[in-house]
Image 1 (spheres, rainbow, N blue to C red):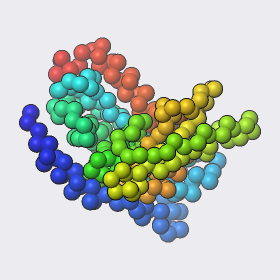
Image 2 (cartoon, one colour; image 1 turned 180 degrees about the horizontal axis):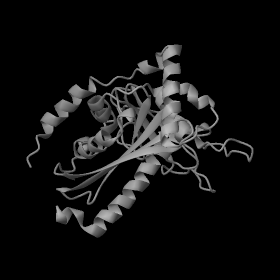
Image 3 (cartoon, one colour; image 1 turned 135 degrees about the vertical axis):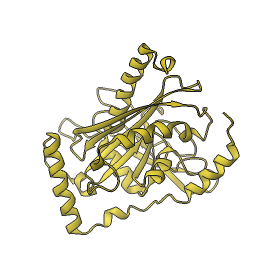
Length: 292
């Protein structure tokens, strides 16, 4: 398979121009919010879930968060089997309500900076398997959190932004490692007392991720304290958050903070990641790629 890297880089820059950093959906009228709330209650009843007591996080005016992750049977091999999972959770209660998984043979090789072209086919396949009520065009408000970069990318188009532009969905990039940019290490989070909230997002500290060439902000670095006596030293407890599409920095960070419960990773992407590990183990046992 011949790859025109230069052409794809130019395509990324053009697509990046379509990325919106405005959360226009936050400016809904009261009647529209009421309508979405009624739809949300109906979805809860249909899924058999019960909504927990409302909290300040519900003021973000979203109904569901969807964690997205992609892995491969052999990350260094081409072709290989790509596995994607999307876990849909109610917001702010973090109750799991739905999931979609996909398997796709991937022929695009690993090329730094062009990883979205390798991961996106499997992710889009999983997205199309989601129930219609969780996709664009429905009356429910869903924010997709993608394990990867948003605009914190060499050309401003990581997989979260690419996914958002392609689908039209609201998306956030939440990565476990830094691709580009510079930042100052956030201060050590304060250890919560026994009576304090168990939500780690409320005590996570942050600093801005800055593009080294232009000097503009491209993301936010969150330093999260893990539960069960873990420390937040080094970079293992850092999250690199950047807007994907149709969202601003402040709102993206607020949503990620709300999804940090008892783990360093946001609950939606943590569950998607765990599901993929199980699927990958099963695929390795069955030898799926060889069978195809």
